[in-house]
Length: 234
Image (cartoon, rainbow, N blue to C red; front, side, top):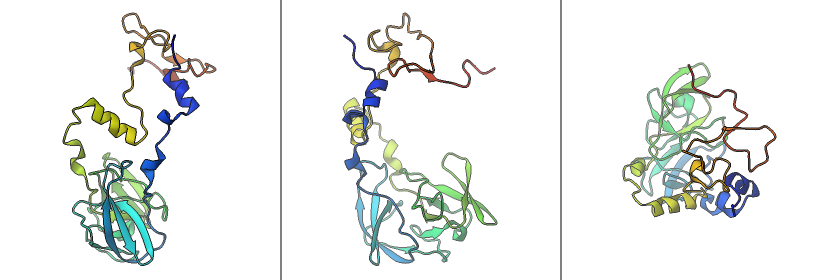
């Protein structure tokens, strides 16, 4: 007898398909409107993040940020809205950061705590300033526009060698994914039995139509869901 396919099981929402909340116990965010000098209290490992995290103390406030390359415990970092510091680890407004400077953990809107460029080894480069807008060259090689009052950290995110060593063993990959609540491995639909998936059996591995009907039930709603177009582009 067949079993529920992944699309149905995801809809039910069991622990296998939910994010493991314990992994996300550290919230990365800048404190609102803070100025002064911060101290790196501790460097931490978080299973939910690819980069090591830093616990920063500034006055009565304590917060977490992705660590930058070369950060050490006890180090002092500048947190300012006006200073034009070129020191790595300084938290500054984009409008005060010199052009061609590497930055990461950029705010999407002023005061939201940092959204862009937080994965290990990544960084963006301040490209140009036009009026009240700052253009940043992202790791994807695309240029993105930000408000000049959005904050960012100078430097490159630590942990750049994360992908240099291959995983090698399937079991290790399984535990990496499991720590973040991600399902792995994923079985190809055409490799399943016909009772387990609409694309199962496959007769020469050629799946049936990949375009699901609009009102198809969860067990049949697989493949392309209401695609704008199908087929090879000419």
